[in-house]
Length: 315
Ligand code: NDP
Image 1 (tube, rainbow, N blue to C red):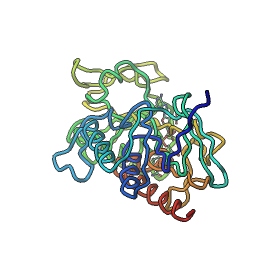
Image 2: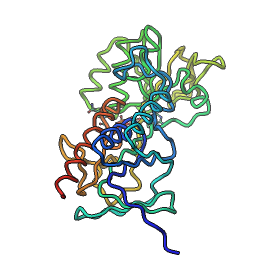
Image 3: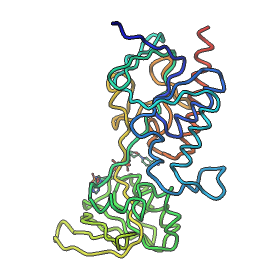
Image 4: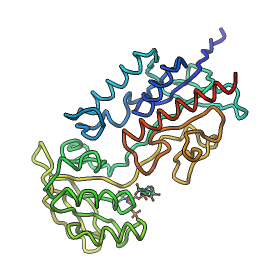
């Protein structure tokens, strides 16, 4: 029996702040959006605790509750939110109908596709890192640094993100230990200069994280090994920040959409349009600089408005 193929005006892949904001705008514009949530409905924010920097929540909110609110808001205007994972795409290069396979067994076609598949923070892979994630361990200094005001923290990484986050933390924290695994930074000269000229950042070169130390509830320190001398020491910190890069979730679009050398989707300047007409990208999947819920939501709004204009231009 032939499979029935569903046609959708506006297909949104991903359910973080970018995807749900795109859905709110698309639904209000009567584009009858369908969101496929991906494996983690709600995205990265469902794995964080307090969110204190999203405007509109004066008392803060937890990541999972905020994402639930966004889902409900998107559904209020008629968005269909479905659990499912895009497994294959076939984008029409001349702006025709785009085809997306869901969960390997369902095919949908769409006039417009909004990609909001996000990015995944890279972790060291230590069991203690996982154990204390959310209890002193974080992959986002801008999100969680505030909770460590006046305290001593450590950050691992030596790229631009780590350098930027270390200087951010230095403004809030008493002391920032920066753990660099080689004898040099990867970050740009300007960023390194800023780190080295911040008095309360101590850089530990040739230093690898062996273990996050805790009291069973929260982080109390980090065990660090010098890979030249093989000596280990424990630094007393209450916060441990991982800033060793992010991986955009773009494998599905390899060879189809334009990407930079690290896999982030390239969109047109000041826009969310990709190299394929009718396909838009928003949120962390196309942003390796800001990576905030609010910026993701902003580009989600842009993607829906651009998709709406694109559809209107085809009538
Ligand atoms: P990068 O990939 O540039 O850097 C990752 C860093 O983490 C490297 O220093 C790497 O060390 C280190 N690292 C990786 N794995 C481990 C590990 N297991 N243990 C210890 N250290 C580890 O990622 P970023 O997120 O910093 O930057 C991504 C891109 O975004 C870059 O192109 C960057 O320039 C850009 N960016 C730009 C910003 C801006 O313009 N304001 C701000 C932030 C990012 P090693 O050097 O030894 O490989």
